[in-house]
Amino acid sequence: MRRLLLPALLICAIMLACTFSGGKGTATPGNQGNSLLNSPLVGLDNLENYTASLTVSFKGTQTGQAIDQTDSYLQTEWPKLPAQFTSIHTRDDSGAPQVILSGAVGDAQYYQADPASPCTVDWGAAASGPADFQPASLLPVVGAAKLADEQTLDGVATKHYTFDAASLGLPSDATASGETWIAKTGGYVMKYVLDITGTDSVFGTGISGTRHMEYALSEVGAHAQVVYPAGCEPVLSDVPAMDDATDLVRLPGLLAYSTSSSAADIFAFYEDKLTAMGWQKSADNGIGSDSATTTFNRSDSNVGVTVAVDTEAGLQQVIVMIPVQGSATATTGADTTPGAASVLPSTRAALAMTILLGMRPSQPAPASFHLEVINQAPAWDGTKIAQSQDAMSADVQGKDVHYTESKTPPGGSAKTSEAYLISGQEYDVVNGKVGPAGADSKTWTLWPLNLELMLATGAPGATAAGTETLEGRTAEVYELAGTGSGLSGSSGMALPIASVSGKIWVDQQTGALLKAVLDYQAEVTDSSGNDQGSGSGHVEITVTQVGNVSVALP
Image (cartoon, rainbow, N blue to C red):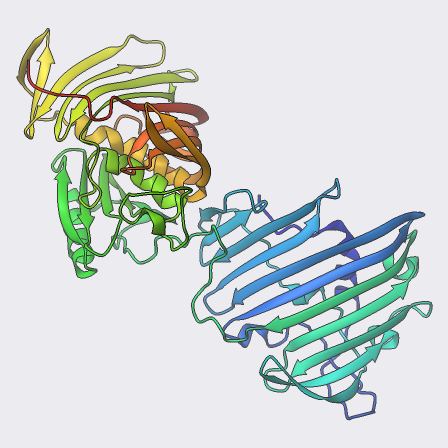
């Protein structure tokens, strides 16, 4: 479980904060008050929002070995929402600098192991998340103190107090010098500075030296809305779910849940809600089948909304996807794709497949191309988790497609199907002869949903990794990493995806996917829907012959 990590050398500070006690009282200039600060956390929960910083350093020795350690915390909190983000600047066991980020916004739990790692997000009360921590909780309580004067700090009127070792109840061989500034309205600590010098009676056996603590509160009430750290994205919160939704998960750009409502009611619900939000329906795929989608676009947005409904065991599995947008420059080098200069790598990654397949009216797909996809997926063979394989080979020219799909179950033989999609009509190839497709033939319509979900899972952690040349085309390279909180794919895989990592190559000119190499972890169930554990999968996608493919019926 992820926890907000506290460096070992701060244990003493925590002990100091918990050991001393006192009650809040009054003090007059030059006189000793009986008790000042019983709880350094007082008043914080009544603030709309604030930023708290704390630096704790120790310089001394432990069993004769020199110690010189500094750790700092920066926390922005919205107590009433609730929401908070905390970064810790410390050093790891080898002495190298380390920055850890952890936070929560409602049921969304955020974590970043270091600035070079993706900011991951989990959802729900049971999700891994930060411990309940506030920097002020590390401050020792203050008993008797002297009122020095009154000052205004960051626009807040405060009373300024001084205190010493006796105020903290320290042993007689310790010395201390401290100051604190307490808001006249609200009683919360605006600033706190403390130096303690002592030996093992204060810090523990064999430890002696000086500890310095400096705490400050700032930007009180300055940010009405949550400010997300760079690389951390808000979850998809403004798109509603059906009233009977269960197993609900919200992630950046994604909403997923189960419902007993009919597919027709679900699509009507989202057409009503999304139209009211300014979106217009642009396409339906597979309506009336067990797996169907509807897409929506908006003239002022570079991204679209996909609503996918998959029927499983009498329930509808609903997934709503909107690729994450951002305002930072996302790519390296020139980029002529409309809107690409104003989107994040996560958006670039999430949109690549939909652009390739011509599902983005504002961003035209390549005129033609050849596609190869191999998905080695974990599957239950009746006794253990094994590997199945799905392969797709296709020539695409505009809306016309000639594809061959091969499915191989664990330990079984490949089953191959071939078809054409010409001018909106599908034709099956059986024993070398072309004829009208069966009423339920939706292979080409549905197969991308699984890979789009993988890209949506990995996209939040996307980082730019330079450019490469593929068949003469400049491709932007992105490294992907993300967790999926058990979201299911569509027909053809139907695996709850736990995590995705790997690389994708995006055509710089069009924004379309050119190549992908992805590894993923997924939960595996048997034919009765019983959980059998997790397994690994691997997907490779290759797009070649861009602009040099033609498709026609034989």
